[in-house]
Length: 111
Length: 114
Image: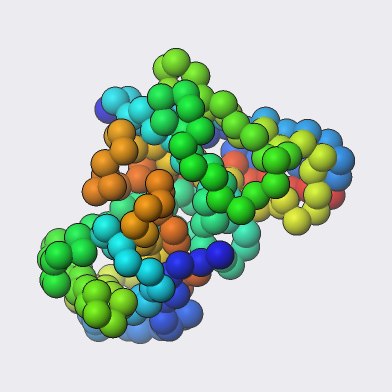
C-alpha cells in the first residue's frame, strides 16, 4: 500500500515558471524525502526534511513539511526543460525499516 | 565512488519460470532495499537486507526471496513468475540503519513476463 499521495498526478508548465507538487501521508514519520525519476530509470534523491523541520532549501528546490496536516510540498523555481521527470515523495514511517513511496507527479516543462 | 549497478537491464521470461536479478551496492553501503515499480505507479517495497540478514519485508508473497552477500551485493529471486510480475525492479543501497540516510538507486531491471 502507498503511504504518500502526490498531487497533482500530472503538471505541465513553461520554462521559467515555478512548479509546486504536494504530498500527503497517513502516519507519523521520521522524515520525508523527495526523489526524481527520469523516464523509467532509477530514482535520484533530491532533498530530505526531518519531522522537526518546517522548511528546507536546496538550490532551486524548496520543501515544506506540516506534520499536523501530514503534508509536504515541493517547489521548483525557474523550471527548465531538464526538470521534466516524475517526482515522488517518500516517507520514513516510525517503526518501519525503509521508505514508502507515493504514486508520483509527472512534471512536463516545455521550452 | 561506484554507484549502484543492476543486471540485467532487461529480461523477458515466460509465466511459471524463475528469475534472478542482481545488484551491486554503492561502495561503503551495507544495506540494500528492493522495490517493484509497475508502470505508472510508485515503487513498492519488497524487502531490505542489512549485513546479510533480511531486515523488513513488504506485502509480497514468499516466492519473492533474496540474498545479500558478504560484499553487500544482493540478489532478488522470483519463482513461479506471473504476468503481474512484469515491472521495473529497483535496487537501492544505503548506509546502516540511519533513517536519515537517503537511498541510492540503480537504474533497474525491466522484467517482462509473457
